[in-house]
Length: 137
Image (cartoon, helix red, strand yellow):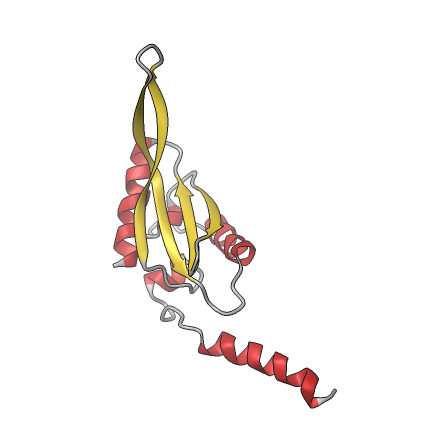
């Protein structure tokens, strides 16, 4: 194989090794598959509360977590990793992905990705948000 073909492969491998990752064994490492989130916002949905008056209530539904971009990281790969993490939920964990019945979506957000962790009910949504804020601190 020629040197010109090896250089892009070497650059890619170097970028993966040099990318900032969470420390092994830390709650962030265990929770977000090694990616380090740095921001959390409440995930709220709107629900009509009075059709005649056209009023809408905002209801807490979980958390938005921002994960900065890294070389070779795609939304699809991040979603795959987080879905895999959810399938191995730990009962005694502080990870928001371990709250029962959560679902995850990933959207590109400029310099990173917004991970939306949606819960099945208000109590679970509050727990997801609490855990996400604690993990990101």
